[in-house]
Length: 212
Image (cartoon, rainbow, N blue to C red; front, top):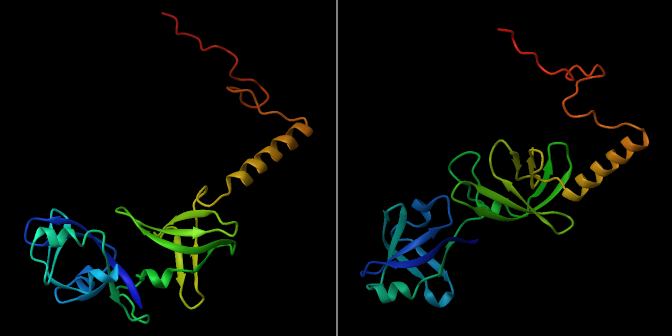
């Protein structure tokens, strides 16, 4: 199986180094010196990593045969693709490769259907599941333990415990609120006036000042 592990950015310096946008949780494995990577577009590769180093928080790579800034700039926006065994699992428990999570059914802890994972978005702060709902709309689910409580690869599903508002349909909420208001009007009930407590109206009196 082929997976995108990085995207080449701008050239760095004059000796052929390039910045890369890492798209793998294991750059030390996928982007190590000696790794041979396919490319998109295919005409740019394959590329063999010669050296790698971190500079100002960004990974810099140099490829065999790329010796100057002109050659590095020609690779800009090229995707780097690694061959990965579909059965391979990450070393750490409770970690997953993107391809293992794609197309999983998403349900709540109550068994309600939410949708299907169509994309994993890797943000600086956290990862997000992009979930396509049955009506074609999308909802974004943070991939954190407090929300994603179970990943079951055998059953091909992700179980989530979403906080209020994360996946609620706004139209349904508005409709339910309107129905509740109409029911209250038919029953002849109104909300208590602001600042009043119970039937006694105990907050009508103004506070008294202490006498000198």
